[in-house]
Image (cartoon, rainbow, N blue to C red; front, top):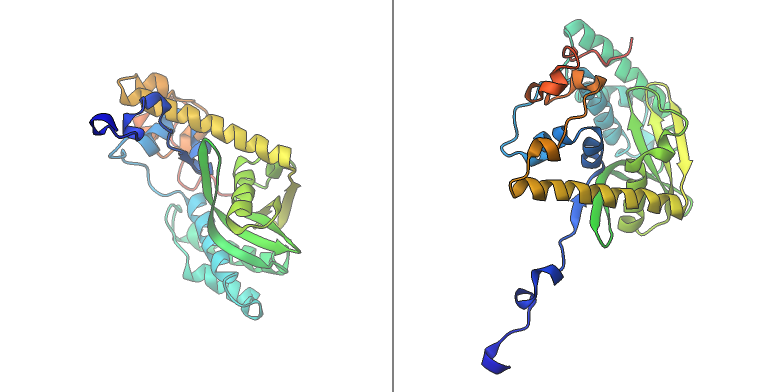
Length: 283
């Protein structure tokens, strides 16, 4: 070539260079939808500003998830109610509870929940993956996340998501962007059909399920792509001098009372007093 010119990406107009895929998780997408300011303070600002302390509801959910992860990692013959309860004890944390008495009460509740779940909706589970990181790429994004459990039922896979807070509504499984992305990720990562998603409310044993078809899964994926682009545009604009308060506006709501970055958000603090760390626990 004349003059030793090389034809590579570095010689192309940047407008025609391939754009890197945007990596997104259900948690990040949900945070953006709830409150762009919280997204910025959680994922964009570095070093990240200090957050509030642990909340009992989150601690309780984490303990139950860890116990169930350990339980279904055991051979089926060793999955007994006593073992399930003991796994809660091993992973127990009292962070965020009002006092030792309240922590002890919920520890007993969690033991019962996990033991009863094993005897109920979790009795015949055939997991092929536990806390598995799955992903699915498109032309615009890589959607990825960690599924609580992926079961095998016949030739197909089923995504199972544990819940310990409020009981799910009848349409929550179908409307959940996270579950749809997990189903797509499981299908791509494990190379098996996957269209069914389930929310398992461990305290009550209630199961809310949905059977997706290809249009419904692709609709969730398209919304994730659009949201990811909105986030990327806001981050890019902020990085070139844009007003972060305009690009990442707050969305004041009752949830501001338990937001872990409310100390950095005047609009959030103006919604009302901060909720006690144990306020979300059931009666």
